[in-house]
Image (cartoon, rainbow, N blue to C red; front, side, top):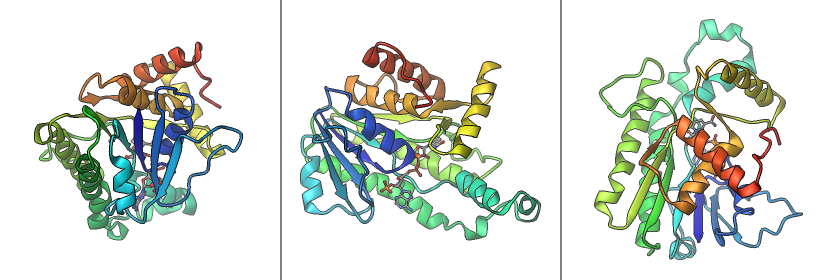
Length: 267
Ligand SMILES: NC(=O)c1ccc[n+]([C@@H]2O[C@H](COP(=O)([O-])OP(=O)(O)OC[C@H]3O[C@@H](n4cnc5c(N)ncnc54)[C@H](OP(=O)(O)O)[C@@H]3O)[C@@H](O)[C@H]2O)c1
């Protein structure tokens, strides 16, 4: 099968790309990114074709041609969320600033965030759908836990961003009714924990500890999140919306059946 991955140098995108090398059913990968992918030189990555695009709102003809015959797309491209911006900002400057400037809404260009997260998702989907993909064509859109389904329901924090993501989900949900042969899945992971840096490792440890007392905060290991969405792309979509708990279950099962044992999450 041919798989398109959008946002392939991101946290999740790069783990998806890494795992495709271990999935024999995936024979071709069209990896879209704005900067070159870094692939492990020790592995045979000949099935991966990396296309550098300047923006997810524009696709040159040679890239559109690659979309022909695609069986699935995993869409991980999204503007950095205000949550991440917020933590990065305050971690960079120290906690004292939290009391003074708890929000950076003035610095957050919501029109650009909407363009990248919502408009580009539609433009990317249309480019693939018009290029003659396989049928069914599975489109897996990465959203996030807690995204409301009702745009009228104002979230307490980052309300504008949450409404934009809600509207993006509602837009993606319409793709199958507007386009025959299209199947969609909205994946809503909680915090994607990983050990790609020391700080992220500390955060992952905290979440692991909270998981022992019943997962009060939805979270998922990076390898499980990637395995779950790849499983849905390869074997079919279980349901339209996959919540964090669904992704944890599907990801763990997929890794177990692929490796015989569950991959150790801290590697
Ligand atoms: N990380 C988490 O804890 C978490 C939790 C829940 C949901 N999610 C969702 O999962 C998806 C992937 O998350 P992630 O953690 O892998 O995100 P990430 O590391 O920030 O990667 C997102 C990708 O989006 C593209 N992107 C970012 N800013 C852009 C911009 N201004 N213009 C155009 N493209 C831009 C980049 O693609 P290039 O490869 O082209 O640079 C980037 O690699 C997102 O939709 C995110 O909201 C993440």
